[in-house]
Image (cartoon, rainbow, N blue to C red; front, side, top):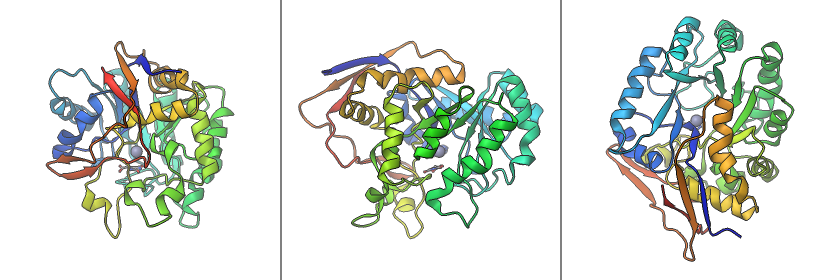
Length: 348
Ligand code: DOR
Ligand code: ZN
């Protein structure tokens, strides 16, 4: 039985930092524990060109608390008009670590996303050639497809055909939420892996909807039924190197969440490491926590693990997390797991 656990400093392979006051307000929640994070490009307007990414990176570094050596790993937002040469140059300059594929209309600020994968094949072929990873929001947006089936249908209609036609392209299925997503990753022997969020290990669709709608549990992909949560949780805690942490921590102010048409996103940056220690402890898998948070991700992205370590400690009393992070943009509610958590990050 562990009561303390020292692990390599973790990374977050899928993070929304936004911009301006929101960026300043929420960035310390990530830099406190994480060494690096893949930064999502779905700003308004999106981060489309290498020049956009360069300037966004500078704004992130300027917003970092003093004394932190956090490294933002930048991504470009793939559009029907993305220039393969701009992408290749950004990668060879060390400016970007991945390109993000949003099907148009799939989620927050995805209107400029890809309307048909055929339109971006020249970019994807170039990426396969140079070894640049494609991060995929894997949901179809066809209005005829039930929202709970969007991920499974995407695998059949888009992901699998893409992997067959371009097996050398390194791909990440982001924030997988279904047994279908897990099984697909397991069926692929190389160049494919998946990130998993903290919240999808904890909530299913009942948590979202039973006893009243919980806007702070609404995210995309939407939480699925319990059998899917368990499949995703088994994948995360298994130690299999094809699964790693991507929190998808996505801040929205309370008025934007608690609304007649609320935004999608769970904000988990503050308590993610505590929640993961709790989940892995519950599943008798604490020995695999470091693989999930700190080793499997760098392996997939061709990077070394971080140098530093963090220490997690299980205390006798439940840990109190802030209910909200107060930013100059407004309050952001921290994800509430709905159960007592005894693990805390003791030192970094
Ligand atoms: O829940 C989500 N929030 N899912 C996404 O794909 C986007 C994100 C956001 O940007 O708020
Ligand atoms: Zn996201």
